[in-house]
Amino acid sequence: MDYRSDFETFKSNICHHVKDKGDIDFIVDVLESDEIRTLYKKEWYPEALYLLAMVDYLSRENDLPVCTNYNDIRAAKLRSPIYPSSVIAASVAMKSDRFKKEAYNAAIPEFLRFNIVESEVRNVY
Image (cartoon, rainbow, N blue to C red; front, side, top):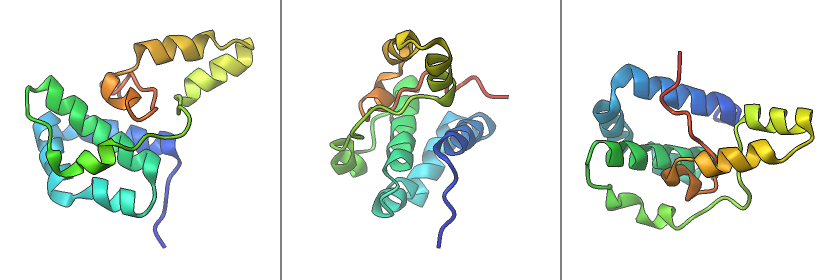
């Protein structure tokens, strides 16, 4: 059985891979490994969609064409938005949805398409 880390850890690992490898090498590695399809077939939808969103975002940032191999997956969307844990914590602590609304409005379009609220993919240490 495969080990599935929590989604926050998965996102962090992906962002670190992008930083370590660079945009183009990251895109090439993901597309050559077909990891998006592998995750999707496992029904690990948040991970598959996050990875696809990252590839699409980096492709746009680097003026690269979008890989059409995943058009069927691009039609998918998570039932409800997934917010970063820091946004959820702030919303709970302050008893306000303001943080969620701000995060949603600042989200990167490629991620938001899949109902993933993400705006900080480059800010990793």
